Image (spheres, protein in one colour):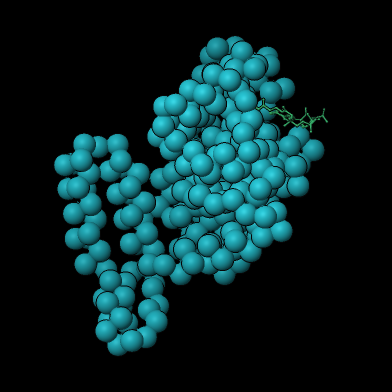
Amino acid sequence: MAYRNLEIGNRDAVRTITVNRPDKLNALNRDTLNELTLAFTQAAQDDAVRAVVLAGAGEKAFVAGADISEMHGYTSVQAQNFSRTGQRLMSTIERLGKPVIARIQGFALGGGMELAMACHLRIASEKAKFGQPEINLGLVPGFGGTQRLLRLAGRSAALELCLTGSLITAQRAYELGAINRVVAPEALDETVNTLADQLAHAAPLAAAGILDAVLQGGEMSIDQGLEFETQAFALAFATEDMQEGTSAFLEKRKAVFKGK
Ligand code: COA
């Protein structure tokens, strides 16, 4: 299907979803949020897709936030609806059941940082800038920023970024644990592609179990989380991929996983 605000690409089992509004620094208006939710739902349903890369078009921004010109005229009721639309997208990404990497080359602000944080892994250029500047607009983050930043980087970092609205470098975001890797701008694509290929060749059902155990288990008590992990571990023994993986090791050959 054709999208107005997205570009979709496929490279082997890796799907790339690119927010394509570079003249607006890829700001997230309602249409873009809805298109992203649809594009991720399609990626989830397509068995040929084993990993997803989320990117922003142009050099300047991954995503510079929710669309301020659209939000400007909202009533509280419309704002509630907009927040829920954004939250639904973030949950769709987080619970995709397939690994999602954010490729971040420029501004990742407000809704852009929230979008990156909903992805499972974040690779950024040294030139990227992160922040939750909503307070400068008299706003509270509305697409999960207060919650995901808290969980990724802790209360001190979440309060500092959200209360000051200050921008931070990719290196600082890395030190806070908010992103996985910082690379030179010219190494960004190769780093993202290599990681995406590695994830796309991993056993898909095991990947889904790991995503579930870390994301859902992380919200439970330690005992509940450990039990959740036991169930995911046991379920893996019912898969052909587990037979293939262990046989390949014993036969000293490379495993080929089919997601069965
Ligand atoms: N919503 C809507 N439009 C946005 C936007 C956003 N979040 N961020 C950038 N844009 C638009 C600008 O209005 C401008 O459009 P125009 O050319 O039609 O005027 C275009 O994108 C380019 O942005 P500009 O501000 O001219 O670029 P810059 O290099 O001077 O500044 C930023 C870059 C990121 C510092 C600045 O755009 C900015 O502060 N954006 C808002 C960030 C924010 O507060 N995000 C959280 C929103 S809740």
